[in-house]
Image 1: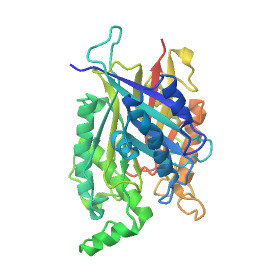
Image 2 (image 1 turned 180 degrees about the vertical axis):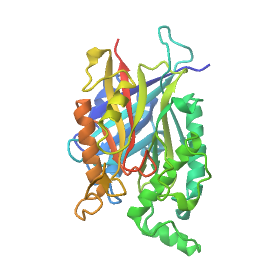
Image 3 (image 1 turned 30 degrees about the vertical axis):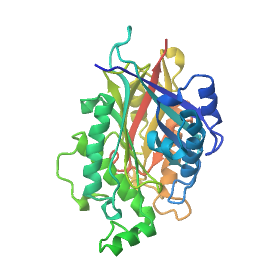
Image 4 (image 1 turned 45 degrees about the vertical axis):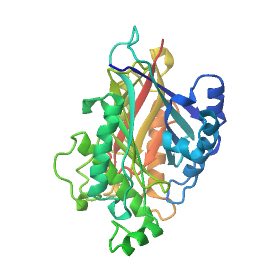
Length: 370
């Protein structure tokens, strides 16, 4: 049986093009660029269709890593999964989290229990008219299963977070579909982000057996009783396929890290945040001397579609100055930061079919102290 060692390092950034922290880690030997499998980042853009900080960050990372890997920047982007989430409202702090994986071939002495494992897969490219519909759901489900196999995870219960980067529609893509005589799920680029995120999340739910009914095109963004408890999806303009990253615990891993999760029922669900911390042996505002060190928290945030939180009206969906996703990221980010003792956490907006309506999954990675 193969054995892998997964590493996780969180690095603060001074801007979307700042790669200095990563380069210092590589120069110091703390990160082997050949072992980098995925990079998840938070950038200080608006998180919308025109948030070019995401593309800027990926471009900067690929350019910096290319000479270290002996590849072109384009080849780096094909080799490593880059998922940049725009929007660091409130106390959220821009940063990247680098995931590495090394095949070590044999079990290590002293390692017991399931440890953090990571797997990756991609779907085929989608046609614009397939976004937000059953084709995207079904292809995503296949990719999730492939990523689980890559991570050495057989039991869906051992999957604690599935991060997906998915496409969105542009006017050109909508026109291309129309030229073939096909209609897209929406003609709005901004709305297409929600459709793509939602369909991708439902693909996770199908793969993990979280939903049993056959999902139809019309269920996307309507049947909010259908959702995944571990899916986190983010839309971007830079691709036309889904990139799937599965994070869970596996017997094949000899990592120093573990991952756990919980599900927030709404934007102020503090007990769920505490439960997620406790799932990896941490408490509120955890410290390293507790035997485990907090590495990062990954969560989704969404304004509840009924316009209320626990019976009281909110105005996030009615604010024409600030997008509801920005409100939600700020609110959930503040809650998590207060309980975690840090604002350097990954909170992504737009949680369609990712946790119950108005809520979302929250995963925690901890390092076992020596």
